Image (cartoon, rainbow, N blue to C red):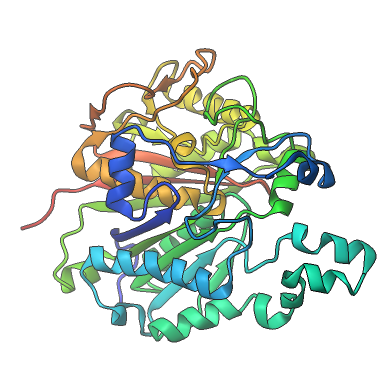
Length: 416
């Protein structure tokens, strides 16, 4: 019988985006203060006008996306298997680790989709001639966009006993999946869990966010206190975790553990779901620390959602100040540098957080514009790295549908 409430070890990480091709490159880029290359979403004013957009926001596509188009199933599968394989390599484990009855795999984010800009004319006019000028319309078939196609392909590729579970809860998707994976491992339901997420921003996403006043043309900067400045980016990330007893059996010596992960749903108005409620955010962090048996004074830093939207940034700032006071623990958000990977941004934060705990070094995030002083936060921005002596840190994520997820990560001495 497998014992319950085992510690959850983080044993493998994978990441790929326009900013960096893998995890070492991600850390090196942040260390160097580099910013992700970006370009305007619309190539001309006419395209912007046709989509009724008031701004032409910047975005960071993948290197393979020379022109604005949706990723194919083949490209998406290559992207996801790439980050999963990197996570397995870091753990030193073979593909067979993912096979077996006691393995859970979660895919967070949207399924395969087409870009509305490629089919808008055909949708509006139903003109057969459009089929000649817009070949993408011919791909509007279940064989190309079946939501289960990706799960089935991954199950076959890795020999999974169970198909991956898919989860989408807007911008907190990957953190919600981490919550489910953590619960499965702690409860004894599984021995190994893999969370993988990918994002491919399309025109309809830009239109939706623009309608919510979340896009601007100014440089991206979390906690800027002035205007929305989100730099959307495409990419993928993976996090491999397992129960501590299995890690020891496999000869691993994990250094970082996910000691808690709690999820809440705030009760805010539906038309303001992205802001959340600072009291619910505060409570979720308090519950995460309670579950991890860690006091607020033992937390070395916090990785908030911090995506550059003043409404949610300010709400998080209130929660942080409630727990740690003005100018309390360091606050970091690298989304202005790496690009905001939407549904998998939390995984990227967890990957960076693991590095901070392992190396006992907290990297500064760099912004081309000044951050606001009105937030009264200790923003670790545009400065040198600092030593992270504390063994614990907090990560939070907010979903547009109202989900709030908080977790505590801890460093432990590697056993000989």
